[in-house]
Length: 606
Image: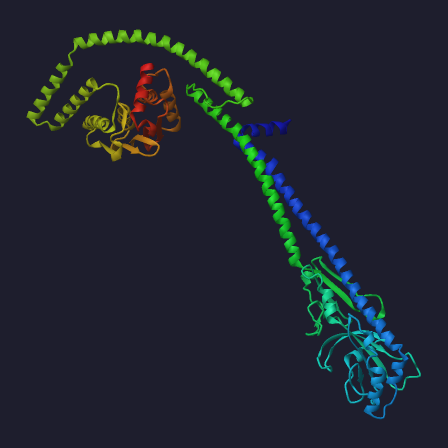
């Protein structure tokens, strides 16, 4: 219950727009992003597993084909070793080269040719019989010359057959070789000379096997001396040399896409192995393709729901916000109906109920206002009658004539200050009696204020001064008559009374984008926060409380009357620093005569 009581007020205090954004982020955006990330990582893992399985199959397939080539060469070597006629020809001592060539032409020339196949590039037989002649597929080895590399590998092997890789520097075209070397010792009766067979594998064929899956897998064939003897880059002629294993970097070997397998189980391939690694370019392309697909799916799955939710939320938010604004206006006693499409949902029901409520309230207010207007008209007639009686008793021309007589006397006697004050007082009274209660240009109202301040300055002497800060373009703006004078009078009466010297009043007018802002500042004693709050409350109070805040209340009422509560009254004060009072007239009420006619129409209706 405690947790429920804690969370529910927090949600109730949250603005509706923020709630919608929270629902969208937690219920739409976050799940879509989480699902897309899950699919991305899952797809990446599946690609890794699939590539490891493909790598295993590729290594096994290539290893099987290479072992088949070796087995074919081993069978050929054994076939040569079982040919007794070849033994007899190689074990014979020839008296002269012509004797050897005679036997060669009869039985040796094409004997080894029938053993050739697509996987074998060359077949040779070697012997230490010095009576033979080097040539074709038959070679002589003997004292005074270094033993071939393949023969050293054969002698080092415990088996009569050895698979060896080496560089052949003795042939007419030196290069890399991978050969099957075998001892020819099947027939003990032909053992006068040592005899060996060498079957050279086709390096182009090996390269074709290793290069068959180029772009997806990189292969390396490693011999028993841990050298890379083929990598899918060599050709039929075996260009290039060997290099040490491993050719792959430690990062590649630890990537999970590296595989190493023995070439086979027989002794003649013991120590030989085939290594392979998946081509990262191919995997990276797969990963990029997967990421692009998931991103495209994520964008589509995000945009479409977002647009749908946006239009749904906007329907609710726009009408709810409009309803909230009109409810705020009710606080200011403005009962305006909501003029938007209502809809048939719950929000539409609230709007219809609100419009019905405001219609009934306005009807009741109109009835009450009509009654009050009749009563006020009766009271106004009574006041007019009394005022007419007073005006009939006192003739204003008598007062003006008297002031003019005083002005003439002061001028003759040289009383300049008194002359100025009497002149200003005469002008003030004439304007008060002759001007209607309407809006006047700001510069005309400022002339009235200036005459009033001159009279006040006569009272205070050198202890009082005033300053005007007026924008030139603000002079023709129209404001309600006598709306600024009560603020100036309050500044003189309340703000500067407690200050002994250096009294200053500043009247400023600024015309900007928001409208016309008029401010009256004094450097008097100011007010504390509590005093300022009480002044604002009395200003908005319907019933006057003595003489306090009467001027501010009158200004506030006149602004409401002329500008439909859209003008804003400004009061700021700090104790010991002075007070600032004024008002802001919106720009819409300064730009044409329509605002003036609307204002007069409403005043006449009230």
